[in-house]
Amino acid sequence: MTLIGLAYNQKPEPSELAGPLSEGGRQEDGELPRPDEEPPSKILELSIAELIARDEFAEWDSPATIAAVESALSHLGKVVRLEANEDFPERLRQTRPDIVFNIAEGFYGVNREAHVPAICEFFGIPYSGSDPFTLSLCLDKARTKETLTFRGVPTPKFAVVEKIEDLEDAPESLKLPLFVKPLHEGSSKGITDANLCWDRAHLLRQTEFLLENYKQPVLVEEYLPGKEFTCAVLGNGMDATVLPIVGMNFESLPKGALPIYSYDAKFVWDRPENPLDIFQCPARITRELRASIERVTLDAFRVLGCRDWARIDVRLDAAGVPNVLEVNPLPGILPDPADNSCLPKAARAAGIGYEELIQSCLK
Image (cartoon, rainbow, N blue to C red; front, side):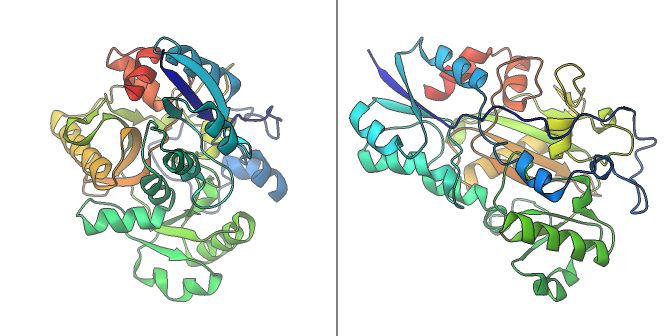
C-alpha cells in the first residue's frame, strides 16, 4: 500500500480580535470612496498590534481542512500526518513515505513555502505541487511580476520600496491611485482598504506603516479599475486547464468598502452565520473575455513553473485587458461548500467533488 505523507501547518485556535460590521450594504454605482470617507477597516478601530496579530497564521489550515484532505487521500493509500514544524525533517526521514502531499505554508523567512519540498528533495522523496524555486518565486510579488513582464504576461506597473526614502524616486513614473502591499505575504495578510492610496501623502503614510509593522519591502503598483477574477488551474504543462472562472462580486461587501478582496473581506466580514456572496462561479462574462482570461492565466502558470494546481488572481485594466495580480501555487482548499474557497468552488462548478480534487492533485 502506498504510504502518503501529509505535510501541513495547523492554524492555532482562533481568537476573535474583531467582529463583523453591524451594518451591511452595497456600494452605490460602483464609486470608490474618497480619502475623506471612513473605510470599514478604520471603523473597526483595531490597534496596530491587533491588526498584525490577527493575520499571523492566516495562511495555515484549520483542523477541519487537514482532516478533509487526509480523508480524501486515504482512498489512495495509508496517510501519515507530518506537521511542518521543527521536527519535520527527522519525522520525514524516519517515516520515508512514498510521496508527500504538500499543503504546508511554512512560517519563517521569505522562502518558507519552499521548506517542505526542499527537505523532500534532500531526502529524495517525491511530493505534490510546485517545486521550491517556484514557491519562493511566487511568494516574492516583485520577482513574480518581473518574470511575467519579461515573458510578456500583462501585470500592473510596479516599484519596490525597501526604505521610505525609496518613495522619492521609484514611484514617480506610476500613476495614482496606487496600491501597496507587503512583498512576501499571502492570504491577504496586510491588505486593507487603507492600502489604496489616492495621493502621495497617503502613499507615504501607508507604505511607512507596512514597512514598520511587516518588516519587509513593500510592493507599490498601479491600481487597476476593472473587474477582478480568480482562476483555479489543475494539471501540468500543456495539459493544464483552467476550471470555471470565479468572478469577484464586490457589491456584497459592507457599505463603504472598496472593491478589494482584503483580509477583512476574507476573514472578518465573511462569517459562517452571515456569509458574503463574494464569489460568482462561473463568472458571467463573454466568451471572448473568458478566453482572454484563461490565456493569461495559463501563460502565468507555465512561465512560473507551477505544477499540479494553483490559483491565479486576474484584474482588468481600464482597457479591459486581463492583468495578473498574484500567483498562488499553494491555493486555499477549504472543504465546506459554505465557505468561500476558490479552488474547491471552481472544481464543484466543473463537476469535481472535493475528494476528487485532492486526489487529482496527488495523481
